[in-house]
Length: 171
Image (tube, rainbow, N blue to C red; front, side, top):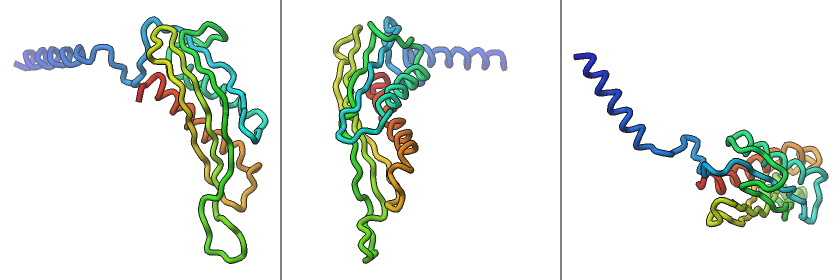
């Protein structure tokens, strides 16, 4: 009787798993013919220039795709192509204070926006252009220079993940 139960469980499990078909548990939706990806340099065209921010962003996007997929990075002729530019970078006061000493904000917000174009040589219906942005809040008493590296890491991590989700995970 136990043997019959085990066979029934295995049979049901295999039917259920067969129904999943080509579903990927990571949520990635890449054509089987797609083997390579290319990330062109995302030039910093924002009015304020953080030296090296463009290279940092480009590298983070390459690393994310490389680590999350089985695609090979190429410098030209990639099956899928990412290109774009950093288009906005500004600091704004975020939280007002009740302090009457003249300090306008308790917190500042650094916001960065990236314009991204995606091309899929195997399926042009997936081509897209979209703007992505994210922010980093920090105490107004802290210099922007002191938080720049941490801020860029946090902001670029979020933007690259959003780009990945929009282009390959289709979320």
